[in-house]
Image (cartoon, rainbow, N blue to C red; front, top):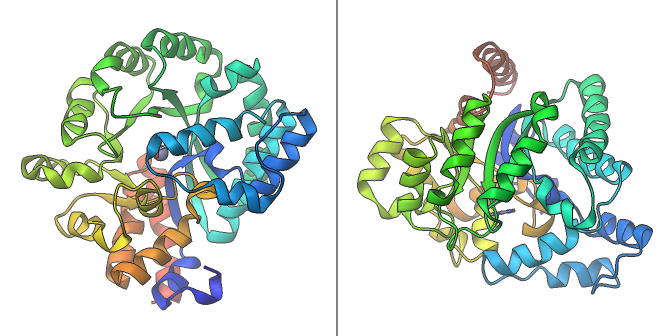
Length: 343
Ligand code: HPA
Ligand code: ZN
């Protein structure tokens, strides 16, 4: 969908200051850049053209996506690659007025290629510094762990990240959910809490609502990535609403990974209407057919999103951010300013 085709609510949202809180940086690696870096490093890929890459993005579930996602990330080898990857995404933030973003970085993905965290952050730092000085971009990084790997490996990575502690605002837990429940990562989360990280985790995407409960109780997370399967548990919904536990919902991702057959089955506005702190995010925009605004546009086209709902979702994105209260106040002020000019 191009900007000209956006409905009126999404057009109104396009200039509005917004936050995106659920974005895997490897999931923002678009086909042209993927092919360019694959060629640069002589990585053999099963694709010859942008069309062939995009034709392969036809997923049946989370695992079928993850297989291609890790293959794609294997082209990232040096600091310049990570600079370009981050720069590309931060340009999207600039164009779409995503004034604050929280980005998941998964250093375990790069270890098989022998790429250390220091190299990754060298590239990211340069792109983030340019975006900060260029247009005042606000960025948080989330140190995200791969749950299909043993907890001992995750603990080793947590320790390897100690010299870079100040780079990250939080830790997260991603990758294959169903066979790797939260209960297996209690030591990791305790160690991260001791180090002062904020805590989030993917839960209730493909996994059952019990995984959301366990992420809250056993891992002490204060935010849930996805969480859409909470709709299957009335008591949990009450708890999430009462405690205003943010859910970072990713509508296009949920459809592309077959959590729902069509967007019309998505329950995001039921969750919002019941008082949950729901936010909208793009997850892996290169793979799922759209950035943040395209996700809003899909909600407008498929579920009739109103201006009131859209504004609530944006306000929630500020409330749910891992920011200090003075930083949130300044985002609210920018939003008020926009609303005064664009009621
Ligand atoms: N779920 C779990 N892990 C992921 C995802 C997701 O949607 N995207 C990238 N890693
Ligand atoms: Zn995700």
